[in-house]
Every structure is written in C-alpha cells, then in structure tokens.
Image 1 (tube, rainbow, N blue to C red):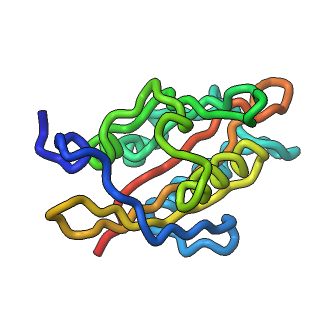
Image 2: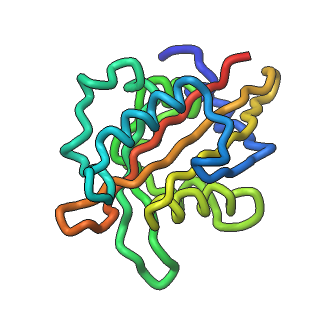
Length: 171
C-alpha cells in the first residue's frame, strides 16, 4: 500500500472553503481546461452531450489518473443518487478508493456537503459545474483541489452518466 493521504488509516480529508462555479465563470486550471476541451470536442454538432462510447481513454492518457465516471441513478423518493463506476489512480491516491460506492454514503445533503450534492445534481441536469475546495488531513498541510463534472447522455438524450476530473492544484 502506498503512503498517500487517502490510503492512510486516519480517514478521509476534511473539506473546507468549497466554491462552485458554472463553466463560463470558473478559474480553470490547465488540466481542467484540457479536460473541458476534450469533453466539448466530443459533444455532437447539433447539440447535446457526448455518450460514454464517445469517450476514448487512449485520446486522453494524460488525464486518466484524474478521471472518474459516475452513474446517475434513477430518482427515488429522496431524489437521485450517484454511483461511482470508475475512479482514476490519482484520485484514489488523494481521496482513497470509492469505486462502487454511492454519493449518499459519502456525503450528506446538509451544510457544507450541500455544495457537493448541488454540483452532482446540476451535472445530472445537463450543466457543467466546477468546484474548488481545500482538503485537510491531521498533521499535513492543506491541498487545493479542483473537481469538474460534465454530463454524458444515452441514445435517447437522457443524462445517465457523469464524467469528472479531480486533482490537486499546483502551488
């Protein structure tokens, strides 16, 4: 096991200073710009969003450690939920492994976590959202973190998945 913050026995980081932007307002990192340029290039010419089949890992090798895929689960009485299908190795090194988990098992819909839920719900509604936050572990310096979520649609045009990028911001 590697000695990374997400894999330590001291648990997940505390997340503070959360900020959420629409795509056109966000101060994107270079990696964030590359991710969104790739996603936009995959959008169909007549409108809509890329499908999962449009996303080719060999076309975005540099981004892969920071990529994650999320299934949008059908709405139930409490609203929709999200299932982490795939999480890149760079994310796992920072946050720990969450593949197979649901967002509802990781975050409440209250207080500071409401920003996270809003980002996922907005992306499921067809909006690209960018979140910056500070991750803090006991005994370690803080880490600035960027999380971008973008919708993926099925053959009927319904958003059934999200593709995301999550990574530490330089300096």
